[in-house]
Image 1 (spheres, helix red, strand yellow):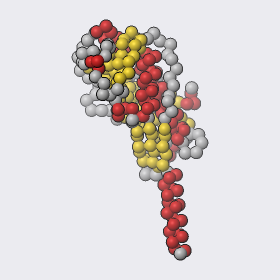
Image 2: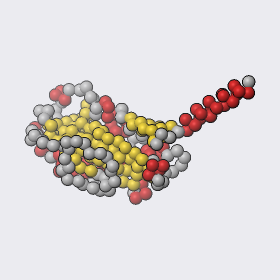
Image 3: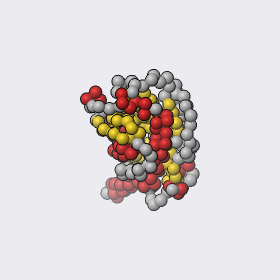
Image 4: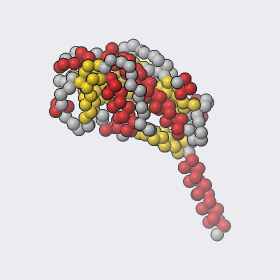
Length: 241
């Protein structure tokens, strides 16, 4: 009887330990302040791929902690807000909608090429950091690829409370805002999307266009991609806002 009680207690303690080493970060809908810029006069279709809207990153850190970060709907809301602020006319369509059923100048499809994060026991600091690499594919009304822009963003948040889920969430939101700042400032300059207004047709592009919003990114470069200029704004940290 005593042996059975000890075995049961051991199992309970093991389950409690495992539960304590697993963290799930659910993203609130991030808000983007309306930028004080002149909107780009382009009629845009924004198509959110299913895998973008349901993006979840899972990772075991040093074999001790299990993290699940659900960017999911936050990503879709982020780009919805951003492009409403940025363009004069935005229409949102689903992943299965046929773009030919709509009137537009440019179709934009966002995706996530990479997501990384670090926690205090990795960096030996009291900070959580997040790196997100977005890709924006832009097509003209004829379906030609007008631009293929990679935007890397960085956010860092100091650890607060127990567990760190709130701090990691904050770092992810700051990375999103970092990406938003770059997209607002450089969208037309990099992609030439305004040239597609009123039925403009894209010129063929030879290579993807890449710009980084951070100077601390450790994202690996993809084979076959070239850097067409780096615009570094240093990322966003919560203690510097």
